[in-house]
Image 1 (cartoon, helix red, strand yellow):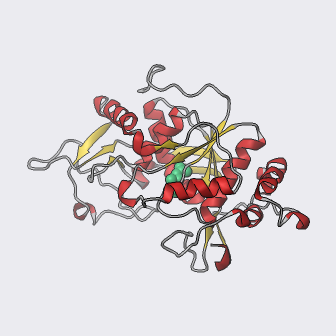
Image 2: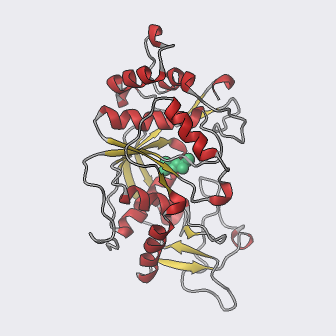
Image 3: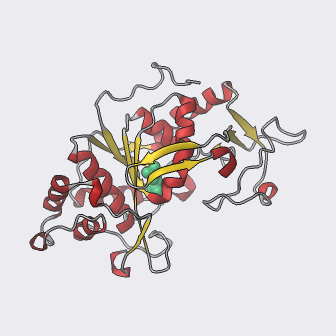
Length: 309
Ligand code: GLU
């Protein structure tokens, strides 16, 4: 079923577009620099648009000042993006419209379950609980709507990641009906990202492999909303010695222009020795000229020395 007709979402009419979509939960660390770099090089190497979207829809996790600091770091590293930066917190009208369409079609439904009530369900691969479908056929008497979930199906969703290869997931069985609008009053990442990628005309998503597990959910939503499915490339994620993704919580520090050469090396694009201390803009230009997916390490995670974080 197509829920977004031609008149609701108007993807920008240029052939190819990539994006970098950081969550402003802290400074841009080495791991996010790798995602920025990979998406930028992949877009620029084919002359595509490259946009930056600040994913601040999850306000409770947003750190004051982090978005501006990320943008300043990107600029300092020589990244130039097309058009104005898009802020998810200013686009809730679009997310509401998408949710309303799904609700009107009976594809999204209110859920009154608390976290405690689904605590006995099986664990999904991302550590969340597989929703057992308690509210699928209506709220039980005495329950009030806390969140909205989308109906999922058992038929597997299949796609070919440009780096990781064939991926197959039954969202119905392995995730369950997932949340689009959260009990704390915020739209969920999965809905926001799908609406934004569609509305911004993104054709190529290049991001960390930690999001590989979300992709089938996003393809499911794209299909329900009548949006095209972009091509996906999930880069290896930078992890510390304990195997944890670099983040503010794992003590990763801010990256800067001096980190570009290492980020290129992480992505299998080691610049020549004489360029290692070249200005960031020159390193980026070298990366654009030499970008090849075949050079990327085909891994979901790669350890980096503590100093890189
Ligand atoms: N905002 C997400 C993050 O910073 C990335 C989302 C995406 O690329 O789809 O982890």
